[in-house]
Length: 254
Image (cartoon, helix red, strand yellow):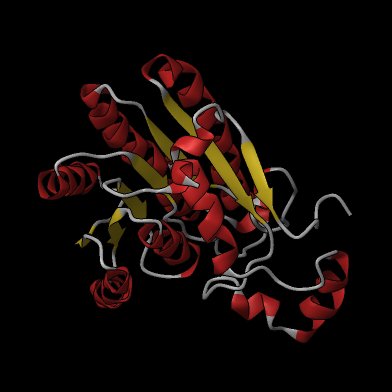
């Protein structure tokens, strides 16, 4: 299983202080990676970093709003200065929409979502790609998209647009950077129990209507993404690029 050994590997996980991001960071750290998590909540950053340090490898937590270009550039520079290199980057930071009717959604509300989910991923991947290209050793870029990119969530046009655009951007990045041995993939989570999703998942009407459509018979857990993160960061996925990987317990196929 040496292909999955991430000893000496350096990775960035945005939105890595909770939910899917923290679970991916934990999986990467357990496999031997040095992990830098970016988040806007300093208290959650500190708590997550303490949890990750239990794996015995290098951990750095940085305050960064991925929608701000200067903050992203500064965070990437600090990450590389601290660890000396970069090997993979997970653009996982995201926000949900306001749940307003489409005809009542104003442009500012739409852009509040795309600013983080799409612009933020662009800025993060651009900074990571510049470092990976300069190193000349290849690497891996991974985006957390959503089933909303391929389905039609009512009152979720901004979120769907941001995640759909993210998938298309990842494929274009994969094509351009393949010559540098840099691969890019997107993960599409289904209904996952996270702080953002739990209010909906725990409501009785939603639970009754949606859970029977999940063949796995349960909501997903952040831990379901830890192994996938290790695979996508590791040499085991060296020939795997420009893909969208669905993790939904069979929901879409049912």
